[in-house]
Image (cartoon, rainbow, N blue to C red; front, side, top):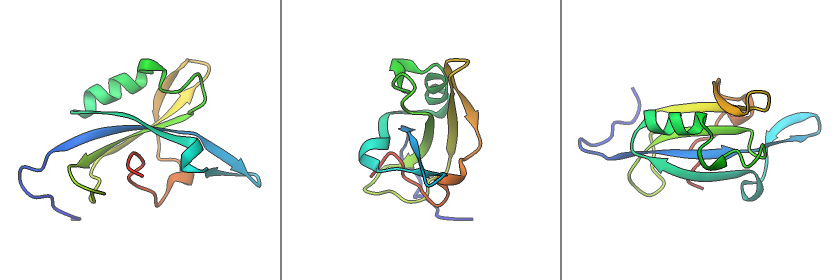
Length: 115
């Protein structure tokens, strides 16, 4: 069942953009200083999703960030128990983000927006 947050816990939806890099022919997540950025947060998943899909304020940075993730995060310091995650991949042909499966290179990593 996982971690249960206390009743009344407040949540936010962090939007983080990520640029994976190629190292020795394998796709890997690069240095956090150069390849990811928490773009902001929303109070609900629907608004966050709509704005990521529309690339509001150019969150892909003109194609630099090719993935985005929205994480439902509880209030707190280095919170645990991420409950809801949605991944997106940038389409250069369509010039927008589209929902995608969790990338293999991101396995075993959480709290993308809090580092």
